[in-house]
Length: 321
Image 1 (cartoon, rainbow, N blue to C red):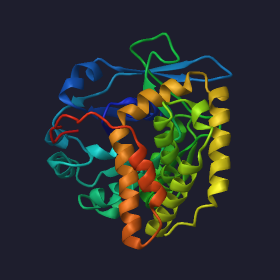
Image 2 (image 1 turned 180 degrees about the horizontal axis):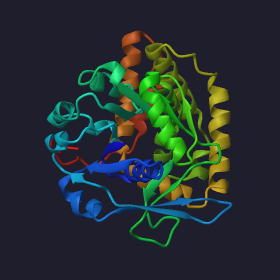
Image 3 (image 1 turned 90 degrees about the horizontal axis):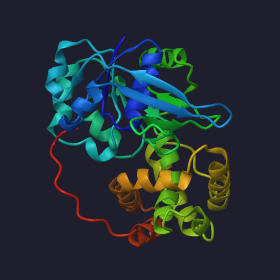
């Protein structure tokens, strides 16, 4: 089974190694600056609390930097392991023309992603992926400076949503790698993001300190309720629980995760979420804009967005992966 991974960030490397353990043949489409690094191989280390780290190495079959160059292979599936801000530009249409009828697996992370993808591929060709992993570039949690590390909570499972004929072979290869996999509805990942991203935003406002964050989470709780209500209305999902219920769940997670995880959780969120800060802000504004269009409450989402620390103006990014 030939699989193309688009993007070689932490999750792209983790899932490349995971799929390879399930007997898939893995290639990458990456930014030109990543070509030499990825061509030299990928090494990922899974951190486990009760047992020692488990390390896997992957030598990709091929590494590409041009979407048109992947046309020579009949890909079983193409995994778009990039953030929402990267799903724009001419490269996506070039990839569509190169991979034909391949199953397209994309992270179910933002409401705006599905319309962008559905404008390029037919809906029944798309599979939504929700991940349970926390992944980052080492050395956090391991002495190996050239590894990517990740942590999967004990009950964590990947969730796949799409047509049965598209989902079944993907589930089989992941299970062949020893991974937990569940099936769900398109939008489950977005609904989860709606309930958690406001807390990530408030954590940034609190200087990435869980202790400071726990003093008052009411703004995040109400913003999460607004976002989840908007997502439920847009995707036809069940209404979210009351803000106090959402808050109890998230506060419990904030207390448990630093105890259970075998690494510095605050440092992880600081590094990872600073990197994806533009996506966090885009999600808050996107939910609020959509909520206003539907006549739904968005005041807490707007207040949370306004309280976010200013970011340096990013350099213009080319139309590439």
